[in-house]
Image (tube, rainbow, N blue to C red; front, side, top):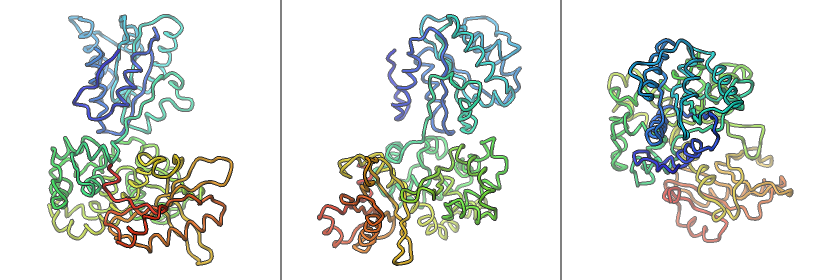
Length: 486
């Protein structure tokens, strides 16, 4: 089956191809797929369009009691079958059997969206599905392609894990991610790299934030950015204003909102290690393991290993809007509700640049090194990219490295392809390169292979003429914003 992706779906070529491949499976039996991803990434549009294009059935779960679910699904199946009256169901077993036994000669996609809503009031549903699928694999059944979809990442991640009833039953496990920084700029139709980076530091790559949440209000130029923040993000009449709070409220496993907000605030303040987070919120390090794990499972925190000291990982917030909320909005919430965005932004802009844009720019530089640079830039394919901290015993200090690029292990000393420093607002010069040279020498002394290491300066502000001249030597690489997007 060859079905072109509808034009109204931006990007998502990989996801669309995987879905088409799944429903094209030649198995004569029902097969199961699971699609997940944070809210507002376009999953409903993607799966609804798939059903429209392939003649499938789209069922949307709601927050309702089982009897209402049975009634709604009965209406949809009756419309599909041409029945003049809704089908009557009294159990999930009957519903699932009716779906899996639909008569069809070609693979038929059936999507159940917001599946966690159904399981919340009917926890037996995954077991019912397991039994029905197992029965039909032992005998010939209809080629139904049942796709379960949900936005509660903690729940969806556990649906196929461990001893879960559906473990081993799915032929598709697709996560719909946020758009990367390049696709986000294209989606927002922003061509100025600095403006694209600033905007991405606020709203990230969630498609709905442009459409429904700010009604296609896009910053028109760097000069318009401050005004856009005040009218589109700090405006209590816009849905984006409260979105960061709702992102946590939607996760059912986050039962203590105050604790989780405090953890996220700690990371925003630069306390990215487990110990630093614990100290900030007044807890012992052993007491925050659970909230950290829950936030990771919910896709709101990510643990980034230190490329040099593997035992010292740091945490980062994955959703830029949450970082922006904790740095700018949460401390001034009552003022913003009273429409004092001008005053709040005037005193918060510097903090936005240091606490939000600076770390975000570093992460974008790491993403560029991992996903877009490649062997033509680093001399070999990067295997691991991250941050690092290198101790300097002689000077009794340590050096943070924003972008560490390592080659794949080959049995010899680990090759360091690149060491980089990223500065959003600083003009970079020879001093920054000297610091990187010192770090390179320290790693050489520790047994790393640094013979072909490229020293990289990532700057959104620019480079001195001396550094530009020095970069012609070959081991120094200068990366301005436009290179991150080209």
